[in-house]
Amino acid sequence: MKQSRECVIEEKQLLQLQRNFLKYESLFAHYPGMMYLLDHNGIITEINDFSEKLSRHSNVQIKNKHYKQFLSNSEYDKVHHYFNDTLLGNVTHFQTIFLSPDHEPFDVELINIPVFIEGVVEGVFTLVRDITNERAAAFALKDSKEKYRLIAEHTSELIRLVNVESEMVMYASPSHENVLGSPPAYYMGHSFYKDIHPDDRGLVDDLLRNINQEPAIVEFRRRHANGYWVILEDRATSIPSRIGDERMLVVVSRDITEKKHAERELQKTLKQLKDLKYALDESALVSVTDETGKITSVNAKFCEITEYSEDELLRNSHMILDSGYHPQSFFYEMNCKIQSGGVWKGEINNLTKNGHCFWVDTTIVPFIGENGAPYQYVYIRKDITDRKHAEELLHTSDKLSVIGELAAGVAHEIRNPLTSLKGFTQILKSRLNSENDQEFISIMLAELDRINMIVNEFMVLARPQAVTYEKTDIQELLQNVLTLIETQAILNNVQIYTRVIEHLPEITCSENQIKQVLINILKNAIEAMTDGGEIILSLYSFGDEIIIEVRDSGTGIPEHQLAHLGEPFYTTKKKGNGLGLMICRRIIQNHQGSFLIESKEGEGTVVSIKLPFQLSQDERR
Image (cartoon, rainbow, N blue to C red; front, side):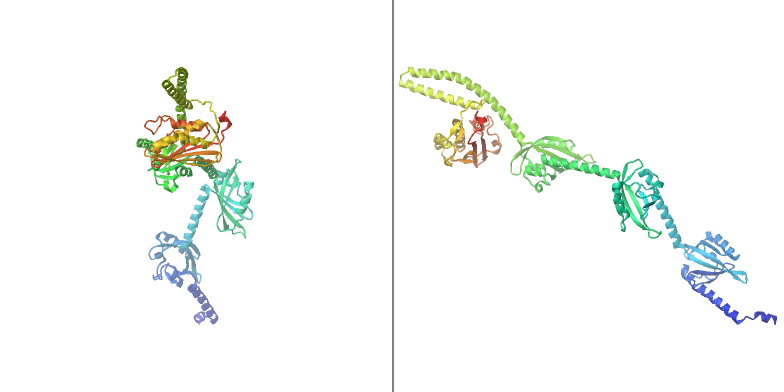
């Protein structure tokens, strides 16, 4: 009877047991993680539904297997230790490594809870959490922290963490000591404005107040421990703070003092180069060629002087300007010099697009590449055409000076015996009464007068002499010349047409000298038309000058001869001596006028004379 009473369970107790079992069953079934029930031998007797999904052992039989089968060999002793400790009634909590069916390790966190039945541990509940991703994230975080620590401690840039509201520096990198001369502790806990240049505080205000997502970039100055200013380029990025509504900035600064100095030097150099280029462009013809001699750039003055456009010059060589004046050996020697890396200097005669010759004083500078060979050439030319003309005039003047002295000496030596001859001839004329004698003596006196006139012409080439200038009717003077030259024109089948503006003012001149000039020019025009032709003689005024123009229809003068006309002893005639035009030029120059010859081969020649109505007082003295 006693045994029966002990087995009787009250209905109330039974319901409580049922409720407790249902609670356990609900916990085991619905726990959102892996839960295992192991017996005291380590055999898995029960697993919850989530274990099938989360254990990486889906479709693999787990139940009724020893936990050792799911462990890495290196972890067994540790897990076995904690399992035995749990069998002693202790809750154990640790991390270990499980193996997947493919023997891939993954990290787990285990909580072993002893199962007590009537005070005796009958098994172990094991709660399992896969912490593979957490461990990976933790290691990554630790790795990132280490990397950032290394970057902050070893970078040459300054890194500061700034509390915007308090304007305090919360962190300063060790690089502060290298750049600003003070250790990081000198800055941490102090105002961000501590060593900012007063004039740059406004820029720093803008930096700290920046609330954009994009980093703010500002340049400002900070004082070095030694007292001088360091220019920094700061980038500030806002980061969230965990303290209330405070805002934090990560400010990364780069020392750009040397960069700014280099920029200033670069700007200074660029300005100097710009000024030098301006000076060159204003004073010289500048061009650049590649290593093959093809033009790659020219300045405006080059185009102006050569009369070519930039497009016409580019990709051409400088031989486009060749005038034919220099032999090929001249250019060969020049190219040999510059291709070997040497600087060439010399004078070159060039030809413009429209056929005008000009001289340039040229310097060619080769630019040498890393291979030791020129990769381009810079040509700097100065137009010296006027100088060359001046040199030619000086050369001509030297010739004239010699001829003048010679002429003066010859004229002086001729005049002395000429005076005696003329005097004795006049005495003979007074003594002889024969008509035949008188006729001969008259001829002799006429020839002596002719010799005297020739001597006077020689005197034009001598040093300046007293010449009588007086008011002259230029139209009447021109008519007298035409009368004298008319016979020669008729004999040579030449027609002379005049175009004269009536009522022209009188001019101040030496009448005989101007006649001499006009006769010389008209005779040259007649002789230039061996088969006859026409001469048009024009007379008109322009401003305060009188213009005399003689235009013939002769054979013309080749261009290479035209530039030398008027030089002593240079002539285009077979029997000429080259003094005629030279004397004409000298006479016109003494009259403060200009003498110009224009001619084209096969088209005739035009001689233009300009004379002022009134000579200046300096010339008349």
